[in-house]
Length: 202
Image (cartoon, rainbow, N blue to C red; front, side, top):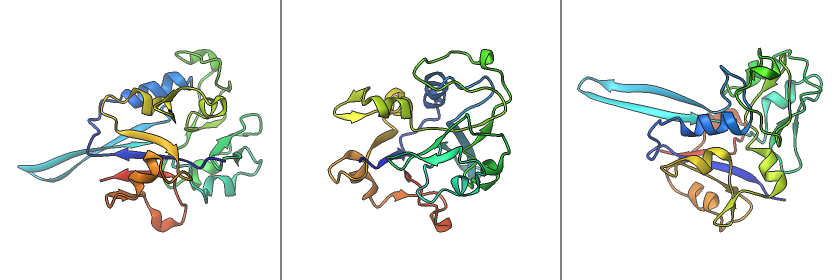
C-alpha cells in the first residue's frame, strides 16, 4: 500500500492561486470555500521586506487530532493512511475544526446547487457538514491522471511552477521521498506530534 505525501517548494510558489482554483473545481467545493488556501504574510521592515505565500492543504496527519475527536467516525483513516471524510456520518459538530491545528477544515454553509461545478467522480455532500482536502482521493482510487509515472492531485497537475509534488513515501526512489531528504524540508508544527504528510521546502 502506498503512503501518499506532498511536498511544496515555497521558493517556487508565486502565489498565483492556480492550485486553489483547480482544487475547488476538481472537488466541487462550494462558493466561498477553499480546501487549499494560500496564506500570505510579510516579514521584515522597509525597505527590507519579504512577501511570502504558503499553500495550505490538509496535512494528512498520521496522528490526526481531527480523527481522535470525531464522535461519529465521520473522520477516518483510509486504507492508505490518508485522512478522509464520510459525509453521511458527519453531524456538523465542528469538533474536528477546533482540534485541527492547521485550520484545514471548513464548515459547509452552502446548498448542493450553490457549487460552481460538480465533478461526478467526487462524493456529493449537503450543507451542514465539515469539508477538507482529500489529496484528490477519487483520483488515487482510480489510479488515473498519471504524469511521468506519478499520480497527480489537481493542485500538483495545474501548478505552472512545479511547486507541488505528490507521490509515495514508501518508494525511496519517488520524487517526494528524494525531496523530503533535502535539508530544506520541514513540517509545520512537527512539535505537536501530528506527523503531517505535507512537507515544505524553505
